[in-house]
Image (cartoon, rainbow, N blue to C red; front, side):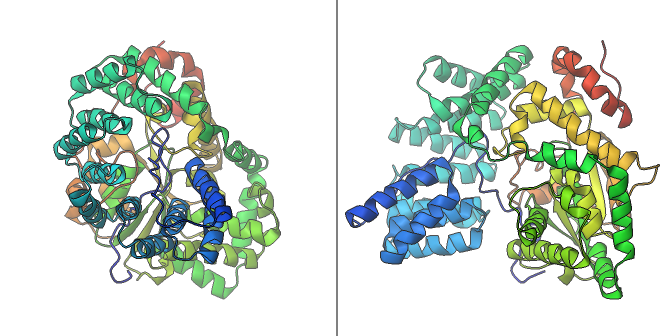
Length: 561
């Protein structure tokens, strides 16, 4: 492992979650630009606010070529880079902007926010506190510090700060939303319900802030057992997300449907092609395949199937490095598409004509993507180490994994399909081509059915023989007997037993976990999520036919009728 790198990087996604859009607090001007460039700066800022990151970065970069010390442009440039996943470069630019601005509080507050997005919680806290010491009403620094305390699970301290902030900044509705969420995080569900009912009834919240409040209100209602009202409010919330500009602006909204259709068009031909391609490898390629395969582990599963808990259990083992939900495999896809001169095409349609050179190109792109984030490539780990690439929907790309990394091991997280669908419907994900499917109960079930039908077709219906070195782990089995499942996984990965994996929740407290379940995995294992769908059974009776094949295939009791 590279010097100075943490065992589990868990870098927070720069993409905001569904209805929690970033609180864009514009940096106050520090010196005027010429009129023409001031107009360009205003347009670049609007692009950043709309989430048009590439456009914003390009425009800020153009301004900096003629006004290199314009701190507002440089901090906007930095924010666009970080939110576009160029984290290290973005942080470097942000630090330079702080120097250019002579520690202007607005610029320092943006740096604190970007550090939080990059999982450097303690440094984010230091910068936010430094701003608030001299400028206690700085909105951005206030919000960053509250979120830092929330990530550290200091809910009461964060709640006190949110109340203070709301008194200082009464026209910032986000602070009132944070107060309600912190009540819920602290298990004060009734108080949270009262809080959100009051502010929603008052009509003081509009736009994204109302959407945010509806989601938190629904979770609070679920927490006090008001399930029918919770479902109704969740539906309202999802309707607003579905009609939001961010959802409407998605490019290629049928991306995953097209990918799965292409994979399913000729499964047997795809299986044959993978085997024939592996047989054609020369000696050097076989050596590289074995080296990568011994170190590389893919952790996949439909979202909300227990992948985060499984990853944290594994990451507690001293021989396992893990990375939290980074699109490394997408870098391999992109390399092939660029090599073929196409921008958007289902990857399956290109695999039938793939060459050994293409495979080497894609492997290199994958390893470089890992190195840019983790500081090392899986090929650089010793034979006693394992690298876990956790990205749930990589399960759609199982044929690509088989082709590029035939010796790699795959752990598939499974969970009761009804609990999975309910949790996805309730969860506040980032808006992207996959998560947009969870903006409705029926569409959630439809996407689950699509993905898991493909998984069954590729893995479970291949003549009884899995095409991958694969282990399935059911969430319920881990909850009921963690040690047995942990021993299965470590044996599968050819690693010795270590008691630390049973204390994963204690170790997780020292990590920042970017998935929505960050507060849960730091707790001891609990059973309250098992069979949670039964609280909403009457809604699942309407989709029992669609889910029945997966309920049966994965070994769960059928839905009562």
